Image (cartoon, rainbow, N blue to C red; front, side):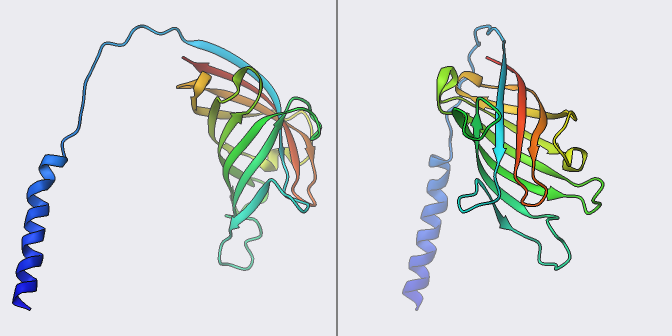
Length: 191
């Protein structure tokens, strides 16, 4: 028992003594070349499909209370992005991320979205931008002219360091099964 304690103590002292050697990091500050900020405008359609045998959005967590309904449900999504409003139009990418249904009051019902819009074809193939914003679903319970503004908080590829906004409106809403299609007009500022 005594030898084991000494062995463990020696190993701990060795690990603590060696940690500062490996705890250093590399850092270098250089003067960046001036970059020109670009502005890109995108127009596409987003289809959130909760129904059918192959849904694009699936609930992955729900609250442990019986009367919650959708309130506080966490949804994972891999929704198609298309050129036109029909689900069958040319696919240009995917919106992958999470959203959580918020607010108990049905008149204020909405969702908080974190989504990465990744493009898989065309000029921006391999690039994406990230959206993190509140989406007030109660305000667009039916397809119509109500336009919602969402915040763009980042990007990669052609949209590196993106910021901006997305203006979206519902083009199709099925209140019975939760399916919806949205038109997106996005303005990105990036380098």
